[in-house]
Image 1 (cartoon, rainbow, N blue to C red):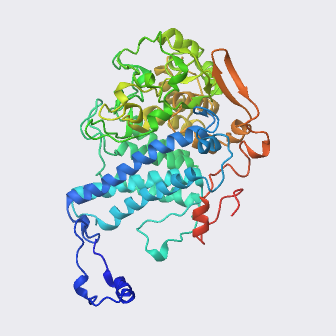
Image 2: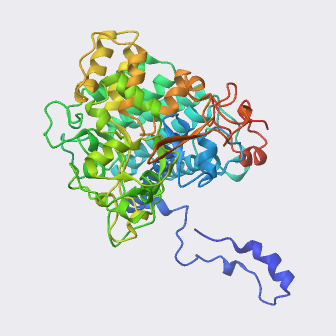
Length: 539
C-alpha cells in the first residue's frame, strides 16, 4: 500500500521543522503491498481468497457455540455462577444490544463480506482460471455470511462492493431482498463451472475447498428461508443425487464408521461432509483455541481412579485428566427426552450422542466427585475431545484441531424432507427415512413437519442449526419462554436446582416481539445514522 504523506505537512509546521515536505516523501513503505495492484498474480489472488476461508473458520467455531446457548438444547455451564457472565446472559435471554458477543458476531460476518468484496472488486472476470475460481468462491462465502446475518438479524445492510468512507453509513435492507441477493450470488457461482466438485466418495486432496454441492445446499436453504419450497427442493435434489456423498456409517458403509464419530476429528472430511472449515494440526504451528476447553466436561469434578478406555480405545481423553476443561454447553433434559421419544432410551444414536453420569461410570469408570454447575446429569459425547483433537506441540487443553462442519449430508436430507413435506410427501418421507435408517430407526409410511423437526433436533444437536430453525418455525417462544428460570447442577447425590439466580421473570426468558431477531449492536446504531434497530431493542 502506498502511504500518502501529505498529512505530514501539518506536523512539520507544528514541530517547526526545517526539512521540506515534498513529493519526494511519496515513497513505497517497505514490506507493504500496494492495494491497487496486489491482486495481480494467481498467487496473490489465492492468498486473498484464503482470507475468506480463514474468516469462515473463525465465524464457524464462534457461531455454533453462540447458537448452542441460544437454542434451548444446552445449559451455559462453567465452573460456577458467573464463570462467563456473557454466555449466561445469552443462555438465559438476559442480553442487551450492547452485548460484546453480539457486536463481535455481527461485525465478524461483515469482515468476511468485505474480504469477499475485495476479491470481486479487484479480480476481474476472465483474468485467469485461478481468478475465476476465486470469484466463484468469494460469492459462495458472501452468500454464506449474508445468510447468517439475514436469518438471525433480519433487515441488515447489504452491499456488493468495497465501501468508500462516504458509504460507511449503510441502511437496513429488507431480509427478503437479501435472500434474493444471496440466491443470485450462489446461482452465479454454481453456473460458473469453477467451484470444486468432489471426485470420489472417499474424498480427494482438494476437498478442503468450498464445493459446488455446498453452494447448491446453501442456495436451497436461502430459497427455503425465503418461502420458496419448490426451488429449495430442486437444489437439495441435486446434492442428494450426487453419488460422491453418503451418510457416514450408513447402509453400505464400512463397519468401523460409528455414528459417534461423525463430527469427530478422526472423521474429518468424511463421505458425509459437504463443507468443513479446516483446522491445522501441526505441532510446530499451533495456536491457542478455547473451543475445546469450552466443550469438554469439567474434569476436576470427576474421580478418575477407576477410569478405563471402554470402547473408545483410540481416544485417550487425556485432556480430562488435567482438570483444565471448562465444562460449558451441557445438554438439557428436553433434548434427551426427544431422543427417548424418537428411539427409546437405548437408541443407537442417543447412546452415541449423550451420556448420563451412570453411563460414564459404567462405560468409562468415571465417577462424579464434585458439583457440576449448569449440568442436568447429561454430558455431550458427540463432541468429546481427546488426544486426536489436541495439538501436541502446544498446551493440549488450550488447543483444538477439529474442523468445523458447516454442513453435512444428513442436514440436506432433512432440509429436502421439509421442502417436500407438503407437495410430495412420498419424497419427503424417503428423505427422512434415509436419516432414520442410519440411526437404526424403522421407516415411516408418511411424515409431518413435526416428524422432521424432532428428527432434526436429535440428528444435528449441537451443530449450529437449531437456533435458526426454531426461529423460522415460530416455536422459539414456546421452547425458551422460561429459559433462565432455574439452573441445574449435578453432584454425587443427583440434580440440584437453583431457583434464585433470576427472580424477575421480566428480565429473563424469550420475549415475543423482541427475541425473534438478534439486536443490531448498540455501537453500530450509535455510529450509523441510517440504520434502524430491530423491534423491542430500543434505539
